[in-house]
Each structure stands twice: as C-alpha cells, then as structure tokens.
Length: 292
Image (cartoon, helix red, strand yellow):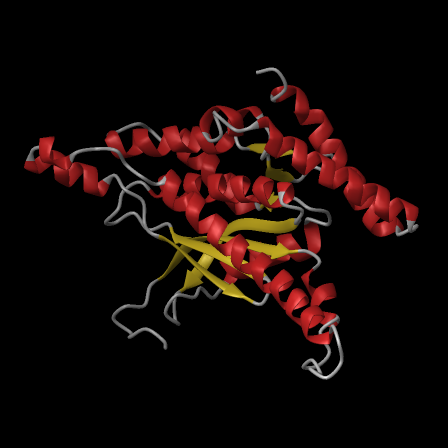
C-alpha cells in the first residue's frame, strides 16, 4: 500500500542496510519439498529452514529490541509544567522504522526537524543499535555486513524507504564493506560534523551537538581509509555497553578464530583473508575490555 499524496515526504533520511552473510548458501541447500517417505529428509529440511529463518528473524528482533531499550526515557512527565512538556516532546527524534527483505534488514529515519527538533537522537540510536546487534550476532555465530548513509528518500510505500539514501547504504554494504563490518558513508560523517560545528543557539542545537559528539565516538577509520562502526571501541564501551559481559566478546572472538582457521584449512583465500581482517580488529580492541 502506498501513502496518499498528502502524507508523502521527500527529504533527507538515514538508512542502515544490513546483510546476514552465509544465508544464500543455506538456501541453496533447500532444493525442494521433503519426501516424507525418505528417512531423515524432513528433519534435514526443517533444520535448514529453521536455521535460515531463525537467524534472519533473530537479527530483526535484536536490532529492534536494542533500539527500543536504548530509546527508553525514564522521566515522569507529571512533574513537568505545560511548557516543559512541550519542550520535551520537541526534543525527541523522529521514529526509526524497519523492514526486512530476504536476508536483508533495513532501518530508516527521517532527518526532518520541523516538528521533532533533535534528529541526532535517532542517528545515535541507530548507530548504537547496529553496533550492539553486530557484536551479539557475532557471539551467536553469525556474521553481518552493512552500510549506513544519508541521502534523499521517500516513503511512497507504507513502511518502506526508496531513493538515493537506500542506494548509498546498499552500495556501501555490497561494494565497499568487503568483510564483516558496517561502513559509514560520506554524507553521514559530514552530517555528524555539521551538527558538531553549528552555533549553540538553543536547547535543541545543544542536544544535537551533544548527540553528534557521542556518534563520533562510535566511529573509527579502517586501514583502507573508510569510516566504520567501532563496535568494540572506547565510545561503545563508555556510552552503550557499560556493563557488557566479557564472555560475549570471548564468544565472538572464539567464533571468528574458528571460522578463520576453517577457511584457511580449506584454502578459501577470499574468506580466509576477510576473517583475518575481522580477527585483527577484535585482537586490537580486546585490551579495552579485559580486566576493566
């Protein structure tokens, strides 16, 4: 269902595009409906189906749950005056929406600030949710790759985004990311820097700058020069996962080592190299978390 002309809005959007790697390989193993007369065939079919659908559904639930948890506001509005309530409502971000297609999950956020005055709140929540989901999936034995960027978009179909914003995020995931990581695009980094440098004229500009500063702590520059989501960096630890269980990182690292060794043993040079990059990143970040 597409939206009415009165509801259409063409403007700047943030888009998070995430791909769960390895799912196509599983799907290729499902060639037809199982023959119940052949022992074990139905169990194998059900197992493959559960493996791929469960993983994709788990990713979507994870990223939505992280967003909902991070966006909770523990404030009793009954204690606010009328003007304070109005100010509080305007200081919110626009709603982050999500939808799933095949083994892809997308988040998108309108950056308009005519009603809700602090769009950087949504940007921070999107980055925080993506970083948390990446690490949790890795600990569960699943790898994802993604791209996040800003561009023009339109919600022509209800619950979906279309336009250059989606194309940019998809291009980052499919053409640039290369190994399991989430790349940030030029327009997004420029937007964060713009919010950091704007004059602090009112409470909204102050909040936007503060949140932009937080976003910048979640970004690192990789060896190839591209900015990526630093899901094990100091900013992630300080502002998002202050009480993260060390075992989650250990599980993620153990999984990456196993996969790296598996592809090395099978002489799969492409995947062995990609997992070596992921392994190097985690090894360089482990000191941030050990004994702290």
